[in-house]
Amino acid sequence: MAVVIRMKRTGRKNRPCYRISVADSRSPRDGRTLETLGLYDPVSPSKDAQVRVDVDRARFWLTNGALPSETVRSLFKRSGVYVDFGKAKAKRDRSGRKKATAKGTQRSKDQSMRADRKKTRQSARAAERKAAAAAEAATEE
Image 1 (spheres, rainbow, N blue to C red):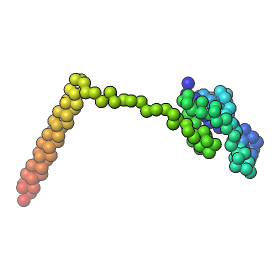
Image 2 (cartoon, helix red, strand yellow):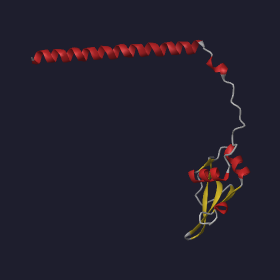
Image 3 (cartoon, rainbow, N blue to C red):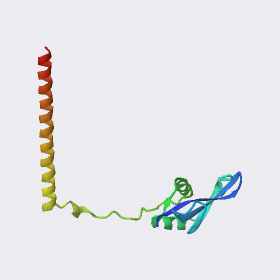
Image 4 (spheres, rainbow, N blue to C red):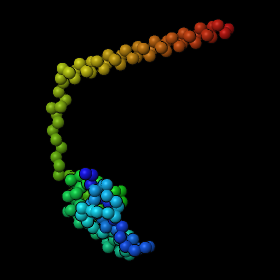
């Protein structure tokens, strides 16, 4: 089940208001939701009252793989959901992955041999084309 964070339209005609909600990606825009994370009121006169988000729950859903829409992502940035988000994770030590194995060395050897053969075929074809063009030019004169 793919989980998305998107806006659900509420409000009346010419006076939109949106709920920032978590839903299954297959459900309709104004359909069933898993959780409501906040509100977005674009018509509100004050910038502070426009966006209200439960930051902890938003981070929870993002860490569990929920994908926000573009508009929700920008609202989350404005409300500080992404501040210090994901920075605590340390980079894994993957130094042992560069080890050469017999199969890997054989594979790289085979690839280089194939590349060399391809280059020789290409140069041979180019030489044939040049010879044919030279012979055609000689017959025209």
